[in-house]
Image (tube, rainbow, N blue to C red; front, top):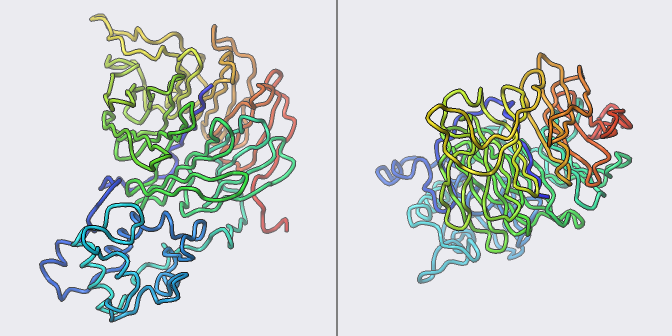
Length: 473
């Protein structure tokens, strides 16, 4: 069984203006080259360079070299070398500048990667020479980290829920963090606090040892995090685009992660090389969720452009629309997708009706329609935000939101019969999940709490608050 995580487009996010994964020049580098006397901005020019190339290894959750670059005073101070990383006014006496300056073709930092561009190095030197000022707005400064986790006075919206395949854990999204609970909701086990203020998806690897997290800071950066769940350690942090990213899913072998971006791209990251092995821009709007095929050779993606698309991983070739190009086949954007072992795909979106497809791209006949669609299930009220197969692929659970209320339904996949209906729930429902044994469904959303219900009867067995509230301490 291959699991995906749905994203949910609640926040109004500034449209992305750049795509990143590799070398990207700072926004005002050309201006600096034209006018060397111009004051270099740390926030607009220097920080994006560090964010893309350095923050993945030098942040509170992963302090390689005992050096943190996400907090300004720590950035200047340096790490285990004992030398000041930035000596304002003196780039030649700044260890950071020495580390990023190539000796021949190679540079000490970024470690194991291509050196920064000459224009980037020159810009950093000029910033240091001008006194290494900090013009970062207070509203964008990091306030939380692993040593200072978020403090909650009210419940955050739940955007993501996932059970581990061994049935031990339940991952729940929070603010700046993912909270790991025992799967029965009896205890909070750990808090995975990273750089991303918004968490859009959090998904366990097939063997339950790792957790992939997508999110970011709206209008500033998107980030993929990979955590070692048992050790509570950040294994990987990659900055991807200048906006939040969505819909992480694992390949069946646990070696790759697919994700969707607001720059209309689908990407796949190889964990062994930490490199991008698929980049597809077939969508025409934000990509909100992804899932691998049962064999792991293809990725299915959905987005705001009202399509379900199929892409080959090895060749990076867009194979076509599972939903065909017939106008009116889908009524609104698609928010979530999942796949079972038979490579049947279920998706849900703006019209609230989950739809089951063959993962094929057969073209529609001249009369129109969708030859790839197997069936459409009775629509939930409002917009559908999440959908999941049970591990055996026999049942489907979906959640929706309408006028501040939510609904959860369980359907039998083969004929669409409604097995469970939980209507008029407090707050919209944005995340649902089946336990690995299929006996329990978990769901949450705008109300902020997590509900665990019997998957056969719908009886709620437990409801709990996933975050520690200040007024309860």
